[in-house]
Length: 267
Image (cartoon, rainbow, N blue to C red; front, side):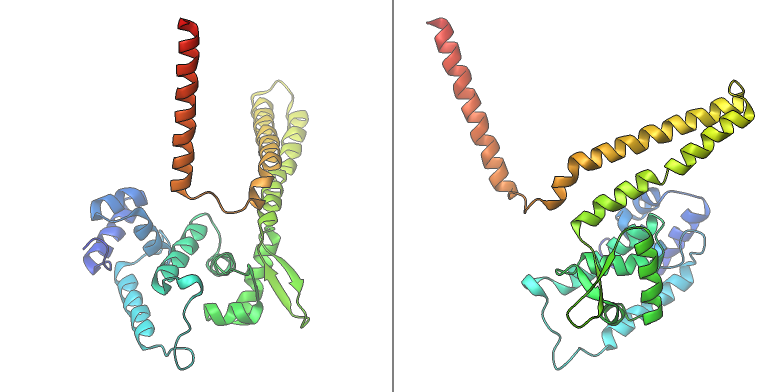
């Protein structure tokens, strides 16, 4: 049923859809499920090329059994900060991880990055990450190495001289700039090919067009990142109802100005 756990029959339909190379959205529509449900189901069970309905169903049953039988930490599980719903947070973390994996990020780095993003401090030690994610310290080390190579986390020493792994708003800017500049070497190499192949040949024209395209994209991204950088340091946004009220007040003021101008013209 919509909103409940996927049935074995639904998993079989997902497997058939993947075999036919259908997009996740189309498979989800045929099941009456959100696209995110299908995406998460596939990515956590081997990905589109390795998904097997029976294996996925058994793995889900095992995970559900572990959740039911796992003991609480301490005499009673500590409540989450700000009165958050633990089940909703876990579901969101799983969704966020799935989205990161869908963008090409390996599973453990995706889980580590999700864990850091959803922690209020925005920083955790390797042991804290290993405990939260129930993986080995070696897995955390490899994940951090990957994330650092992408400029997605940075490390700093705390008072106990332990490494802490940090995500902050400025890292988004740095990662965006690094991604834009990653094209520079491709641009330079493509233009070398233009000289080698002969400037007016079809192959050289193709390479020059690729170089111009990537050059334009890199410059546009860099310029946009510079212009939007301050957004990363903005405070909480105005509540929707407050924004709506402000818009309504603004509309009333504009209407009053138009009426006053109209009266003045008639006078």
